[in-house]
Amino acid sequence: MAFDLPKLPFAENALEPYISAQTIQFHYGKHHRTYVENLNKLIHETAFDKMSLVQIIQETAGKAEYAPIFNNAAQAFNHEFFWNCMVPEGSAPQGEIKEKINRYFGSYDKFCEEFQNAAVSQFGSGWAWLVEDKSGKLSVIKTSNADTPVAHGLKPIVCVDVWEHAYYLDYQNRRVDFVNTFITHLMKF
Ligand code: MN
Image 1 (cartoon, helix red, strand yellow):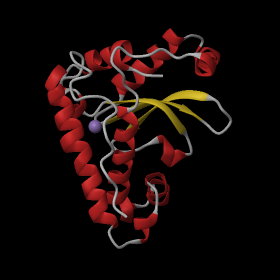
Image 2: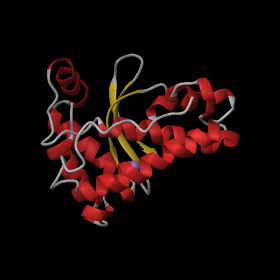
Image 3: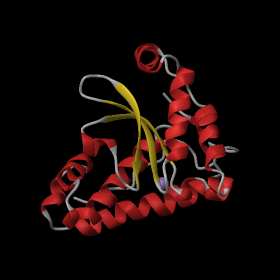
Image 4: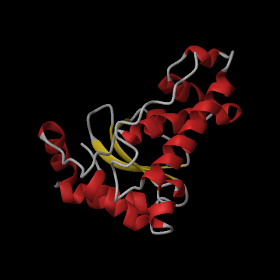
């Protein structure tokens, strides 16, 4: 079974002026597509062929011999998740998730500060995440390269991609501007 490139949940230009259509064309149309295509080639006629993305990630995590499969499966998962973390003009947490953010971070502003810090301080390529552990506790983490919370038994709630390909066309080296814009104008709960 081959994986399909999932449809974007918004039009290519829907996040302008914060993320340009050109960035989405490269990031979704080239980078995300390549992860899915590479994964399909790597798992063709292997035991991974019948597994879900999350199963493949969990089966290959931490095993050097499966690093190419893990990296492409994790990036396929992370990107599909990331597109669903954005909406034009963003949306603030409501109801249960709002209460949990207040409980674990003190306030939404404190959460944003911690999330911003994780995203800006990730050295090199990676991701920042709001995650929930098996006990229901929320925390902010950062992961390097393709690494993903689902490889560590954590449930992702929201994430931002801080690989340079996520922002370089629009923000060049200014990751902090991209992250602040994501938090203020795009992040979806
Ligand atoms: Mn990316």
